[in-house]
Length: 85
Image 1 (spheres, rainbow, N blue to C red):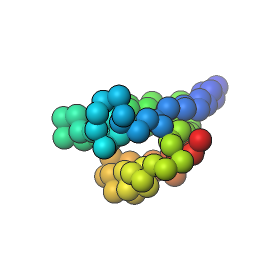
Image 2 (tube, one colour; image 1 turned 30 degrees about the horizontal axis):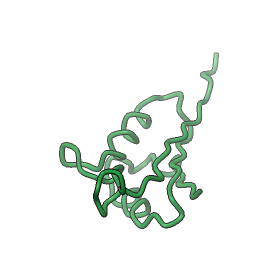
Image 3 (cartoon, one colour; image 1 turned 90 degrees about the vertical axis):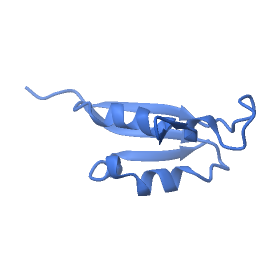
């Protein structure tokens, strides 16, 4: 019996205006890591999730760095795609 595969879409297109910050909320640190990293790590650990799509703003300057420099994502980063609105 094979497991079903699931796709996850994470909306992360905010720009931080309502929070009053120049750094978008999804990249603000929470316990030493960007909030978005906590969300990604949660879904990466679920075996039936085959792909994760992070939906970001067209002007997002942070997602590439987050995905390329995070040790928690190594080996899994090929299943994570950033998708610009």
